[in-house]
Amino acid sequence: MANDLFNSFMTGPDENGRFGEFGGRFVSETLMPLILELQAEYDKAKTDDTFWAEMDDLWEHYVGRPSPLYFAERLTEELGGAKIYMKRDELNHTGAHKINNVLGQIILARRMGKKRIIAETGAGQHGVATATVCAKFGLQCVVYMGAHDVERQSPNVFRMRLLGAEVIPVTSGRGTLKDAMNDALRDWVTNVRDTFYCIGTVAGPHPYPAMVRDFQSIIGKEVRTQMDRAEGRLPDTLIAAIGGGSNAMGLFYPFLDDKEVNIIGVEAGGKGVNAKMEHCASLTGGRPGVLHGNRTYLLQDDDGQILEGFSISAGLDYPGIGPEHAWLHDIGRAQYVSITDVEALAAFQKSCQLEGIIPALEPSHALAHVMKIAPDLPKDHIICMNMCGRGDKDIFTVARALGFEMGDFA
Ligand SMILES: *Cc1c(COP(=O)(O)O)cnc(C)c1O
Image 1 (cartoon, rainbow, N blue to C red):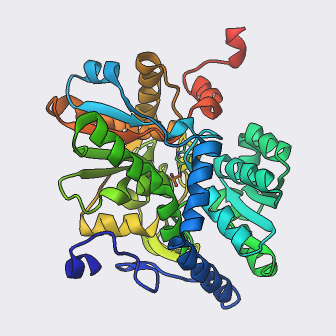
Image 2: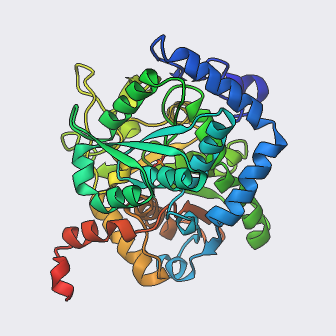
């Protein structure tokens, strides 16, 4: 394994896109030339200063980076243990970390001369970010979204339409994110010449998992600098929520070789990881298989059929996980835990009441794990959690879960 040879966890993937036995490029022959072209372009861009100068400029002036590193003082006091910091990526334009990656892929698409952008979306956050950047650059945007999700997430569907995107409801399968991603991959094969597929997480065939990780790594890079300024040292523990795993990979990656830094990914435990697969914890409750062009841990039944999973948080209900996480899990560099809907809801409310921050339900899972471990840690232990999205999109779900009708507040 690469890390034994070079004593680094940051050298992956290998030339075939493998992180140990995970990742790779399981695609049809028609897709292969596209994947190789994308990889060549990305390899070129990666070492091109003008590419990163354009990214830096947009990150600063369009997204609003760097996002603050915030000391959560009242939460720290209440829990009575470790010192808790929040990386405030919910303050980005469009309200989550997704736009960090979308900007990178769209700039790449422009360099490749592609004028039509396609994307998949679940809860709609990646779709909104993609539609946003396409509007900014005058590119055609088509978003595949499960029909079930179109219904559940109508405000985001309207946002995408306002931004000029075409939203295509996907009725195949169960009409969720997994099916939307299948249809987007099919579109890509059919419209090879002018189309760029903008994937929203560290999944898909190589080079997507590595490329999306690299774009999201701005999160962890900023934390290193900001924590040094605030505390004069590295954090002791990093915690992030995992759907496909992109905000987590973005926070974790720049710290992988700092072996004294504990790394914890938090999966969606739904109604509990032991209860009839009513959860989305691919690592804690799934097993390896192949989906969407890569080998990773998946939620599947005994026959290898992919299961849908369940979580109160629409952004976490992807039945797989990025292959780099699967590898970090198996070699033991990162730890993966799960948090239930009930625990996430409690953390959501604590963040509102003690910090004046309405978090998205996804990072509420990360916060719930912080609340679990912080009380037993010493006061000089520093935790940094990724507040990767804001909760405006989730207030109706939370109201329902807490037993309110919106009309009750009139
Ligand atoms: C999409 C989304 C996620 C899940 O995606 P990752 O790739 O795991 O980061 C988590 N949080 C928010 C706020 C999201 O919008």
